[in-house]
Image 1 (tube, rainbow, N blue to C red):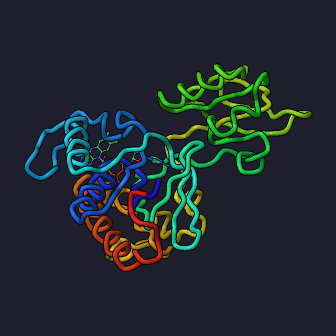
Image 2: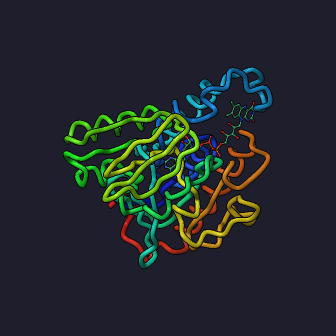
Length: 277
Ligand SMILES: Cc1cc2nc3c(=O)[nH]c(=O)nc-3n(C[C@H](O)[C@H](O)[C@H](O)COP(=O)(O)OP(=O)(O)OC[C@H]3O[C@@H](n4cnc5c(N)ncnc54)[C@H](O)[C@@H]3O)c2cc1C
């Protein structure tokens, strides 16, 4: 499916970008983890969002999401795993599906958690970030799933349903991955487990893993005043661009990123298939 713009992240920044893309007549799909897994969902009181003192995080997110739905944005549930540019079209993979767009707004929030020792070394050689993509490789074999969210538990269930022998570890600490004969060994704060496949299902993906070549400044995605990154057709907004990590700033940057992405699509429309095809 081709959209004018894909938005990665369904928090305040991404939903604001989607509303403003729709206001400019663009097709837009928001790729996001379930809204209940957004960190703001847990906030009992948001005191400083203009005009709504004391609103809960859940009320605010519900209202933002309804607004984007009413505006006609599409929603794709899941984690964006990587993005690649081929001849003016961005291809973004979510599980085993691939979506296409003329531009992308990255609004994935602050990237939390650094990689475990051994994770990078064994990525693609036993370590995977996607159960639906790689699960079949481990049918009848031992799979360890490291999860932080309810969706990770569901991915573990999926692995079980296709015949993997699954050990699920919730929010494991101090992990390290090493080779153990033909298998991998996961050592963590509470013990160790040997496995043929280790699935690391964090709620977010580091921006530079999603977009190789993306420029960072002090660990945050580097943007100009139009929220443009250095990559063609890629804009960023919200917590991923840096402090202050606040809802108003995220919503404002989402507006600018949405408008800039719409302008980008208008300027480059000739090079792409018709939107929505
Ligand atoms: C407990 C708490 C209390 C807070 N209180 C306040 C407050 O009172 N006032 C205030 O202004 N701010 C507050 N904040 C901060 C505020 O929540 C953030 O600044 C704001 O949510 C940032 O919006 P965002 O859209 O940039 O990112 P987020 O809201 O973090 O949204 C990003 C979304 O993208 C999803 N995502 C990430 N990677 C991917 C991927 N690869 N594929 C698909 N989806 C992905 C994430 O799961 C998340 O749902 C609070 C935060 C917390 C945690």
